[in-house]
Every structure is written in C-alpha cells, then in structure tokens.
Image 1 (tube, one colour):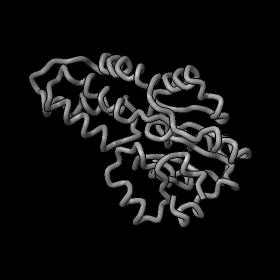
Image 2 (image 1 turned 90 degrees about the vertical axis):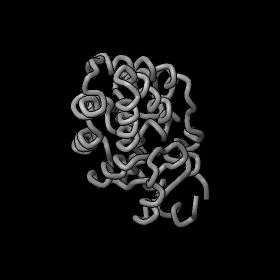
Image 3 (image 1 turned 120 degrees about the vertical axis):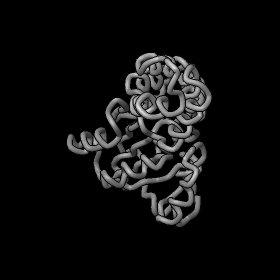
Image 4 (image 1 turned 135 degrees about the horizontal axis):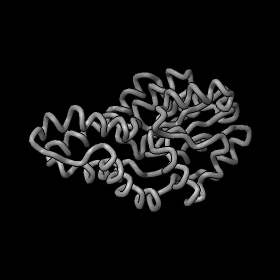
Amino acid sequence: MRKDARRMIDLVRAQTLIFDCDGVVLDSNRLKTEAFRTAALPYGDAATDALVSYHVANGGVSRYVKFSYFLEHIAPEHAPETTGPGLEALLAAYAEAVRAGLLSCTVADGLDELRAATPRARWMIVSGGDQSELREIFATRRLDGYFDAGIFGSPDTKDEILARELATGTIRHPALFLGDSRLDRDAAVRADLDFVFVTKWSEWVEGAAVAKNAGIPMVGCLSDMLED
C-alpha cells in the first residue's frame, strides 16, 4: 500500500470496521456471477448475458433486486417469447449454485492480524448477500467470531442496514467501510463513513480510476491494511 494511502486509513482510532463480504472477505464475486448465469439460462443466452452485465455493473445490490429487474425488464426485451422460471425459482436456483462455492472459496489473508491490530474496534459485515445464507456460511467456516457487531445482508439494503445500525449506536465513529464496488462507496458516503476500496477481487472495472480521482485510499486486500 502507498504510504499516502496508509496515512488516510487510521486503524488506531477506528471504532468500527464495516466489511462487504463478496470480493473483500471472500473471493466470491466470480462464483456469484456464474450463479446468476446458471439460474437465468432457461431464458436463453441473450437474456442471460444481459443479466450478467447488469449484475456486474451493480455490484453489491441484492439478488432479489437483480432477479426482479431481470423479470421486469431484461427477459421481456431479450426473450419475449420465452416462458421461464419465476422469481422464487430463480432465487432457489441461484442459491443452490452459489452455496458450494461460498463454503470453499478463498478467505482473505490477514484477518487474525487485522483483528489484533484493531482491539478497540467493532467488526461488522454489511453485504448485498442473503443475510440467513451469510450467517450460515460464516458460522460453518468459523468466521462469525470476527464480526462481533453483527453479520447483515439482504433483503435489507446496505443503506437501510447502515442507517439502522448507526441509529442504534452499533456503528460508532470513526468508522471505516471496506468495500469493492461503487455501491459500497456510495453507501459509505451517504452514511458519512470513511471508505477504503479493496481492489484485488473487485469487478468494479473503473473503480481504481474513480478512487484515484476522488482521493479514496485503495488496498489490494485486507492484509495490505497492516503494511507500513
């Protein structure tokens, strides 16, 4: 990590660290992209490709929103004569396709060291992933113990989660949001949280350029937060 970026990330003072899941704690962005593709295939290649493009362009948005948008806008445009699975069936197919990957994908290096370096801070997951699924996966993989301030996800949006946890005092300032998508950045801004762009597993193509132009600190992965 560049020294100028390191000075902008004050781990010593941080009271709360908020982590996105996919692409930050877990290397799961690609497997979720493929799960969207698998679920939508009954509607044909054109509709499937359009859903995947919409998914990648809207990283951090919940599967409920994406599949609803797919059925309301993408499928009628790209597969108007096709009768395929409805919302619940698409969600079930997606969940089945993604679960095995979440149980086996790579976990970010440096969690133990970062936890030891931030003893005063609460840790929280705020994700676009399904909340029940997240809690099950994190418990099974023995990651839930890191996140003493809670593991939260959809169907609540990130804005809703952050507003609620700020109102209850669970999120305390100074707070850092570590994310890998435009939505993460925007949610952090709206909640008045400092933001760190985590780049290594991100699918936000223009993210590095946006972060550079806006003076947003960037790290490759979580372990880079500890480098001098």
